[in-house]
Image (cartoon, one colour):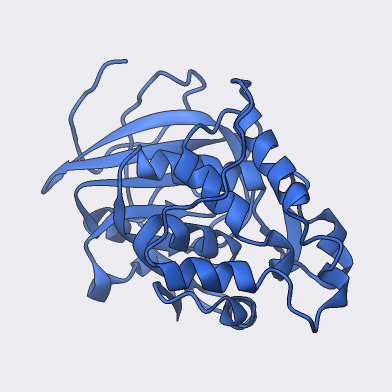
Length: 288
């Protein structure tokens, strides 16, 4: 794979070859929300699901573990089993995710706590599921895959998530980054995420209600930015808020979509790499 430096903005294109890179234009388009389904699949040797996770603090990990089985939620009793979540993690590993820290985070965060009661029995299947307002909780594999790409085997310091949704991906990010900021444009979902995350007592996660297209300049620069909805282009404001050496992972396209990895290599220089096919909800502007 050859590396080419590019000065932005460049046009984004839909390249089907995983190893290929294409020039892209990065202009502000719309505000993302959470939701995904991924089409690509890989099959390395099964991963023995970890229990230890590289978390920012012991209290953070302890809070997540304690919140997995609240006494006031009997609907969750059959879902809190370590085995159920471990089976999900092993499936994700078979699909190609190799980062032990990411797999450990997926094994730690209780996905069923972010589900509607009627959908909770499906919490650990590999599928995106509705959370209301035409949005979904992302497919477990795509959550793990995007975070793996974002980490690139290194330590994440400050991460920005565009599209909080129900808060699940933000919780996973909080296990692998020192600081996480997440923006949601739909007020009821912002409130839902706060309610879902409150019992987890995550100290390094900050939720914001606002227009994700604008990013969060007061907290920039970010060494990682992750988008949870697809547009033809990535908002320029988000590119500008990347730290030098920072990475951004976003779905790109409308009917045909793929994951795009963007790396900032200079003040006005970025590189882009086309990854696997995917399917996300569309980017939307403004707030609701």
